[in-house]
Image 1: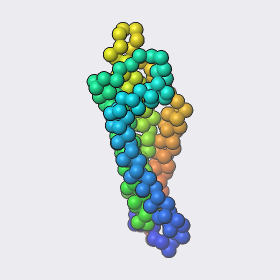
Image 2 (image 1 turned 30 degrees about the vertical axis):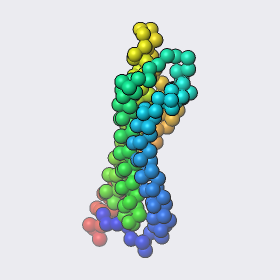
Image 3 (image 1 turned 45 degrees about the vertical axis):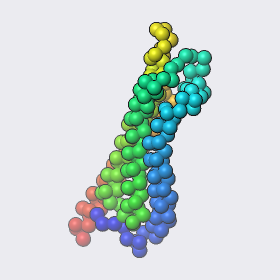
Image 4 (image 1 turned 90 degrees about the vertical axis):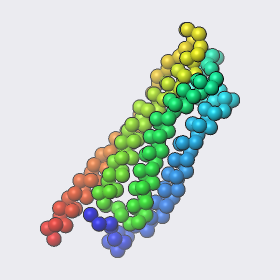
Length: 186
């Protein structure tokens, strides 16, 4: 289906302005999602503070040697890459919106890819945290190693939003298909 023309879609200028902002935020998010884990796992003092304050290992022994931090960084790779991929798909989607392409099959496909990445991110985040804690406590003596699997409301909302976006992408794809079918009759 062809791009939605300006004349038949009066809200397009507003969407185009929003698209510029979203694209900028996506680029920033991609950079942060890829750089932050490297920075965190590369700075033992910062990592120690995060582990104690955010991950609930207060009073528990853990290792900050190079091997533990390398395994921890590896454990964070999947959610970081999923987030970067998700943001890249949104960047491309909003690039199409910025060019005036709103109801196209390509937009539905990009939205679907973003939704699948978000849906996959929901279990990847708690799994990453679990593997990170394991990496930091694996060097502890027996009985002091930790395997901590927990799910938060944020994980639930990430899954729910991913599924909602997947449903919207499916509806959008069907709407594009129906519009193309109707255009053939005219």
